Amino acid sequence: MLYEGLMSHDELGGLSLGLAESFSINKEQTEYTFILRDACWSNGMPITAYDVEYSWKGVLSHHLFSGNTTLMYFLKNAKKHMQGECKISEIGVKALNEKTLLVILENPTPFFLELLTVSIFKPVPNLIDERRKGWDTSFSQEILTSGPFRIKHYQRGMGLTLEKNPNYWDQEVVSLNEIELVHISDTQTQALLFKNKELDWYGQPIGAFDGDAYANIGQPEPVHHRPVYAVVWLQVNTENPILSNKNIRKALSYAINRQEIVNHVVKKRVVECNTFLPNTHGDEIEPLIVTEEDARQALEQGLTELGLTKNELPPIELTYVQLGANQKVAEVIQNQVRETLGIQISLMNREWKIFLDAVARGSFQLAEIAWFSSYPDPSYFLYMFQDKGAKNNYSRWENKRYTELTHMLTKEWRNEKRAIIIAELNQIATEEFPVIPLFTTTYSYAMNPRLTNVVISEMGIADFKYAKLVNEEKAN
Image (cartoon, rainbow, N blue to C red; front, side, top):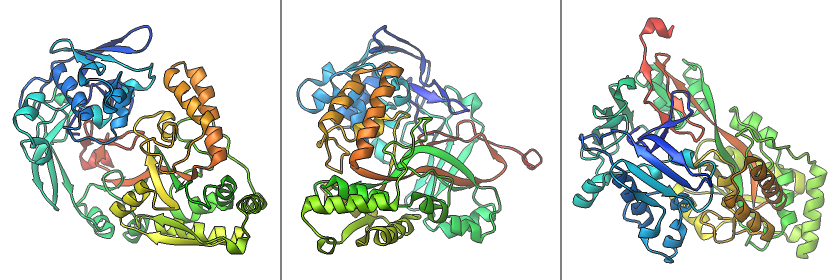
């Protein structure tokens, strides 16, 4: 809502031009030339191609705050620069003049335009950043924005008020004059405020959706469900002496009744998932058909390979964050594994920051975690396990053939060839169990019926650019 990239999304969620007015691509699909439109920062200062170059290189030189910098590795020489193998001037982004930006990629990347809608690729004003360090962390009116809204007021612990950006290039389509984002941690309180029409939105992606709390207030408005490209799985520490055995991992996966979890625990319109890739992007992925006997046979084989009996097998610890249905899911898995395999799963509840630190350090055995893709392509999940040193490969798993295939995928842009590679990667990961997939993710929310045209992207980002508040008569 505050920032816009070279590309954006339209009111139907489709890819559209953002700060770029046009673009061209060379025959090899490795060079993009963008022509920027006449657009301004919220203070009226022009947005230029120099801002984009400065921002992208700023992310890679770590002087601008960012999230997953590996998303920048699609740019030529970006990874080499991060490894100290080339100068920042050699990275594949160059402002040719104020309106023209040349981008050179390492390899053809079919989803590159979609990548440009991700926040890490959205520019900041280079002149302001150079002159007034820290402006971007103040959460005040000093923050310059490029999107449909700007900051009006912020109070720590209370909330954030946005107002329409009068200098936004497409301001004529922006209907809302103000958006108030209120900080309320208790979901029951949120639900009551929504029932009393003091809130216009209840649930994701703006806040948490508590189905029980919403049911307690009588569900005053219909619940909407938006599938997002994400999956909940059990991250497996394959360096653990017990879980390093593939058949033990297989036994655990086969012992889990995902349909029971989906129908009786999560109680949302999610899809059970027992293959590596989530089937939420139109991918034709056949589910695995397994039985409890398959699970017991895998356990027996794994124990034989480890030289252990079932009685000698120590409890396996499952770590989770007490958020939403996580604890209930963990408890059901604990019961299912005990009943099917006769082995013990111990549960460990941790605060979010402690949980993340433990997973990153490898101080866990199983960890219940949700992964959201940053772009609508299976490669996001597949690249996570490219090798043991990959940034988000918390399982510490690697496979020679899998690594070879990921390198092939990075260089392949033809859809038919990519589909073949992706299918083999999915098969390897499904059979090796570096993670144990559980179910795909769906965002649930309720909103004031007067509120229309809110776009939630496939990546789970809410966009209020086209949102409107209609009068009561039209809403009914």
